[in-house]
Length: 163
Image (cartoon, rainbow, N blue to C red; front, side, top):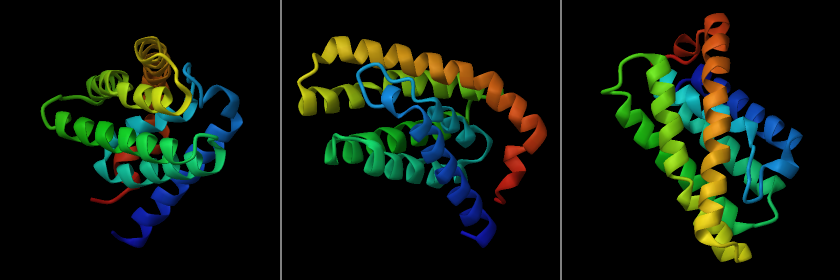
């Protein structure tokens, strides 16, 4: 990994942390409107963003979550698994908007991982928690599609990190 790629990923991790911190009361319950989840769409533009996103999730959960190792383990695993699935799917899904919609569906479906974490850590009922998490993740990620698409027109995410 070259210096520019590392630097860009460090900025992505810092942005993820900053945005998560802004909405912290709404990002760690069974209804999570973690706006920073929009950054997950970056892997549609370039798979090398995975490092910055996962690092941002790890640092955010380490510093801001009250669930300790549950959030570190399950939250990071959720992001890593979901981003990897999206990177694989984007080999077959053509077009960035379609890729982001696919990413939205992947993250929505895989919220069962976070529901398991909240069930184990806090005793939240699994199915209700999964439903509320999936709905809130779907909303945030879907709203993120036009935002990330508009930002891409200004920033060109695919060229920000070199292949």
